[in-house]
Length: 555
Image (tube, rainbow, N blue to C red; front, side, top):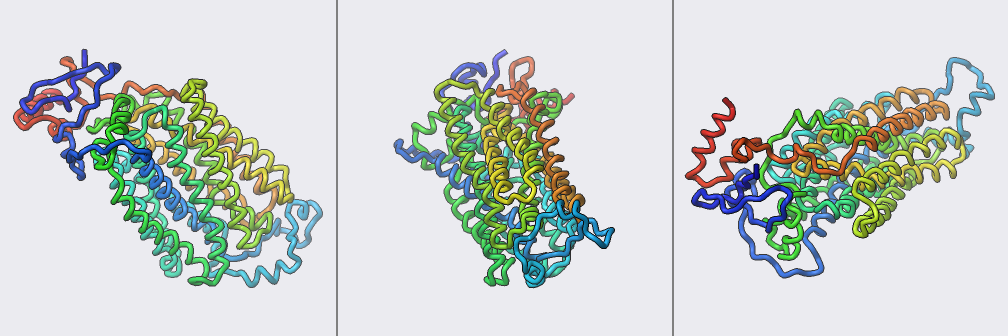
């Protein structure tokens, strides 16, 4: 039975064309009434002549900058908390009054002979122990968990432009308010961080939905790499700049980076809302050539109308669970290193405040650069038909997760060799940039119509990693800032990498899943789009008939 495309219903109610999903069809302008649910109603625009600059380039660059600022606003507390708390007295096996040779071998010597006096001068404003610091750093994810799935559906209904833009702008406002809340009370700081997680929870699902709308499958490695490289870039910029500002006297030191990155987020919001549009056919400056190119892949990109979520089909899909496993392992490792690396470098390798930010950023600089290099290689191999899409996904994730896994095993043996520790961390974190061509593309591969919602599912699960990773690290290292304690942290992360990535590689697929498309009734008419959307899709004189048919289906 062929599927009737309701966007091809004429104003008289006649079907003017139908096609099978596998057949190529000429790009069609969506029926004006198919866009009634979108706040940015479709208006026809004269197509521009083709040029060197495509509107997708603008989208990719602003998406990159937006995610970079989002991560800077998320990560800034990881470096600022080192200055906020200052230097605490760490008791290594404090049950005894004497220090044994074994205990001394478990702690790296501080190269600064005046370390004690210097530490006294660096005491911060807040008396938070390691457990409380873990709670504060993890509180962001309490809110982040809540809005990922709703954020994906909101992007599919309202458009990714509004959801993505508001997520970052509201996060910027909360970032600016963070210093005031911290000085008011610790519970208020935690509340602000939770709200920051709530508004940022919609960001990744929204941008993923837009990527599924604008980018054909063969180009996803390239564009996903550009856009998603924003999260290591944001870390690369935030950690050294934040560390430098915290060690300076500018705006009282540690509050300065919150004001800087929050202010930049507000400026970015102006450019985003002025230049970006939800769909190619609604963009006033898109060329006819670029629009035709995108629409020639209309079976592999997100459709204009909203499709009802097939919950049962999704949760019985093995590729979906493979994707969930890969996302969980990647996020657990990434968040462990992201939130705890400054603490490790300060308490174990004894970097001072200004060095800490720079050294903490180097692994993420490697991740950013490697992500671009790997994405370029994969893009060329795809264009040359040297590797299948599925092979690229599996190879990228093998490098992105088994690489850091081996690196953290090596970290258990570097001990106090600061140079070797930094080299291993740069390599281990750096190869994680390959994940841009791996699981971050898989949501769009499996179901472009639900790319935002699927990323909402995986990000929700990954958010638990963001909560528990710093809490586990804080529990292990509280009053025990030793090499053996950090080895335990590294080995827990190694186990997560091994199990979850193996499941991803076994079960993942690059094929569009059957549940991506709307289901059809016996007459071949789609029926699992939402009723509100279906009514909006057809002319006024056929709406009553559609509503009556819907009532019969429900019966």
